[in-house]
Amino acid sequence: MIRRKRTFSAIALGLVLSSNSLAAEAVDTLTITQTPQNRYLTLDATIEPVKAATVSAQTSGRVLNINYDVNDKVPANASLLEITSIEQGASLAAAEAEFARANALNADAQAQLQRFSDLFPQGAVSRGEMDRVTAQAKNAQGAVEAAKAGVEKARESVAYTQVYAPFSGIVTQRHVEIGEAVAPGQALLSGYSLNQMRAVLMVPQQYLPALKNNSQINIALDDGRRFQLDKFQIFNFASAVGHNFEVRVPFPEQTPDMAPGTMAKASFVIEKRPMVLVPQSALYTQNELSAVYLKQGDKFLLTQVRVGENQADQVVILAGLRKGDVIALNAYDALLKQRAP
Image 1 (tube, rainbow, N blue to C red):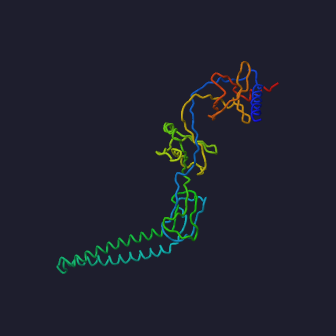
Image 2: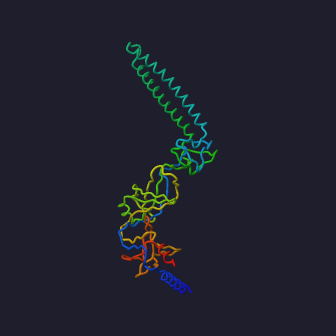
Image 3: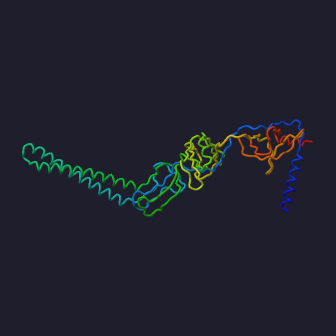
């Protein structure tokens, strides 16, 4: 039964095509030629941000407040999250007290060194006492520097309780909750920058030489936008699975409405070869049928063709036509003239 149905369908289609003939009068025609055209390879690409980061805790404590959540837009240097600072504040107070004590001891040691320096030429103090006082003054000065460093470290620890955004962007993931204890190195929030995106595609090994000889890659987005980009980065190593090479194609900065994770189409020239191109107007389409009106003697016969990809306002014909064939330039105009009484 299946074979009979297929035979009947083929015969029916042949009858349909044969019956749709048209006298070759008052019909604009096109003579088929083969011209060298670029053959493109089209691959799937993924949109991803050029700059993305996960902010981690740099001090210990409990999460006091979270100012931004997932999908929120964050300006650069905005406060993302707050951690309790009681312990850090106490450490800062202790460091400042030690700095004040070191300053006082240093002032006394420097004053004593000055007095001994005035008396030593007169022989009022011995060389040993002079050396001892000089060493004490140097130690006191060093203690001041150490105490000052301790204050700076404590202040930095207090600053770590306020977590700021390293760049403007969108929060993509929150790793902690309010009241949760955190430790240094623990992930807090993740996000990406809106300023620049890139398309990432995997190129099979056999097409890598063709890509290296190309000056641009064409990127087509789902919303209809198309980009011809002449800057791209080819990785110097292939993936272990599939032996494909990763290629990153950055978009111009500040390109709006780019959503990471969405799909795009990337294409580039892999060779030049003779192709048959016809205008879109010459193609008659109905459901899965693609055909042209081919001139046979003094009539036009509706002839099925196999089509390839579109190139601007033309379409590639893969099969059904050859060099020297004459077709109607406008298939639907020819159809209307055929139906005219």
